[in-house]
Each structure stands twice: as C-alpha cells, then as structure tokens.
Image 1 (cartoon, rainbow, N blue to C red):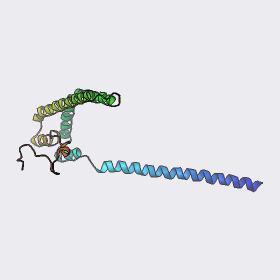
Image 2 (cartoon, rainbow, N blue to C red; image 1 turned 90 degrees about the vertical axis):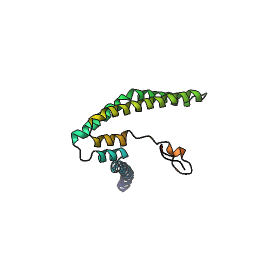
Image 3 (cartoon, rainbow, N blue to C red; image 1 turned 30 degrees about the horizontal axis):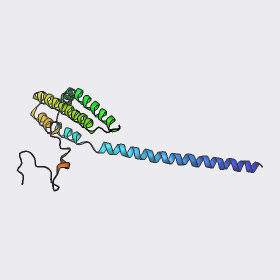
Image 4 (tube, helix red, strand yellow; image 1 turned 60 degrees about the vertical axis):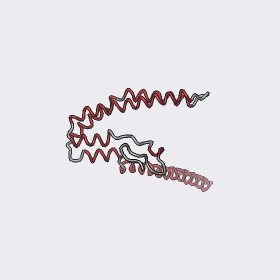
Length: 173
C-alpha cells in the first residue's frame, strides 16, 4: 500500500511539473516576441526622427530645445481645432453604426472635421512661420523641409499608369 501511495504522489508531481514547464515555455516565447517587437521599434527611427537628427546635427542642446519649444507652441495653437475634428469624427463613427444610414450627415461631419484639421494645420504653419524669424538659416531650412512640407498621403490613389501626379510647376507630357 505504501508503494502505491508513493507512485500516485510521484505521478501528481510529474503532472504538475509538466504543466508548470509548459506554462513557463509559453511565457518565455511570448516574452521573446514582445522584446523583439520593442527592439525593432527602437532600431527603426521614424522619418521625422531622422530628419530631426540630420537638421540638428552640430547644434547645441539649448538650440535643439529652442526648436522643440517653438514647434510645441505652434502645435498647441491648433489643438482646439484638432479636438473639434476628433469630436466630429467620433460623431460620424456613431452615425455609421446606426440605421438608417445617413450618408449626407456623415459626409457633412467628415467635411467639417477635414475643415477643422485644415484650420489647425494653417494655424500651426503660420505660428511656425512667424516664430522662425528667431532661428538661424539652417534651422529654418529644417522647419521648412520637415514640418511645412506638402501632404502627399493620397497621391497613390490618383496615380495614372503607375506614375505619380505631375508636380505643380512641372510640365506634363
């Protein structure tokens, strides 16, 4: 009877050990995926970070901080319009999920949100332009090429024959 009790106890210990080991292996694999994802994010800086690094190379910490403060102050000028745009888009999302579907109302909300976003961008650009007078030429060039560039996020939708749209001022063939 004593050996049967020991055998049962040993089987339970092996079963529990197996379950714990399987759990630990799964946790290690999951942790590996998470770490790999975070390391990939650290290795690939965003395009803006590359431009910022290139433009501010050779500048002092105080100069970089000054550019940062100007950019932050400019961004805050458009925050009210961006909040309005977020609110309008939230209203449109609610309408999309309701019956009857009101395309005209959703389109109107979308247009108002887009207009608010454009207003915000205009305020931000104007604030940057007004504040750039305090910057050296090199920093002004950075601001122009990175922060005041035209948006081309929909250009791929208007390509014809796999060619991008003709730039303003370029001659069409």
